[in-house]
Image 1 (spheres, rainbow, N blue to C red):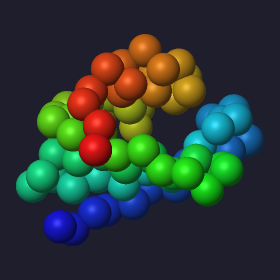
Image 2 (tube, helix red, strand yellow):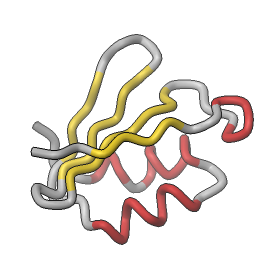
Image 3 (cartoon, rainbow, N blue to C red):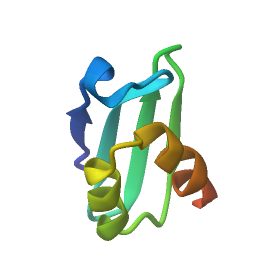
Image 4 (spheres, helix red, strand yellow):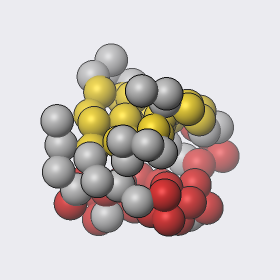
Length: 73
């Protein structure tokens, strides 16, 4: 598994719970790293969803309304 990570600017994105995500295109797994040290791994996440997430202005809302609907490990 090769997970590529992205860290967002907390202030610019107004993030309150996470700032780093990782994505493995082969396994379609998204990993979200939270400020409290916990992680959540979502499965069956299409690359299109990742692009939408990267481009959205409200990443916290996108996480709550879209990403949380995917199955987890």
